Length: 118
Image (cartoon, rainbow, N blue to C red; front, side):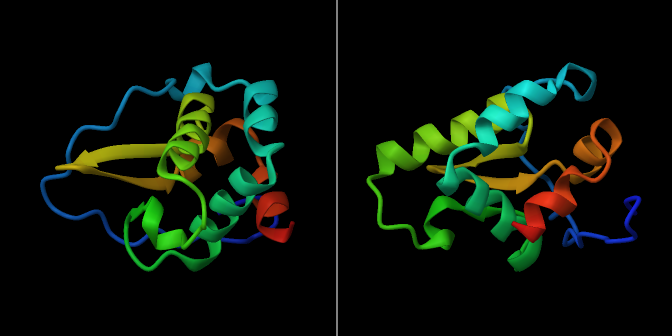
């Protein structure tokens, strides 16, 4: 639970999850990199929707319904992952993402509430 009392519900993890793609460890997540990743409106919307509308443990980029080329979406999701905002796993040919809620709440209390309220 965050300082504001808001809890972002993360559905239970499915059995036998693939390993996450390369990402920074919790203590390596830097606020300026998180802000840089969230400065793009599409990336901010990705995180907001994952926080507020998740239907499963993680989601493919197609779940969002963005009318963008796949290469553009790949770039945006990679920026979020490399900043430590989301965790991605490879399931066959698709990558699925979810917000690193526990890590971000530990490092930057209140940040996710601001994102959700945006």
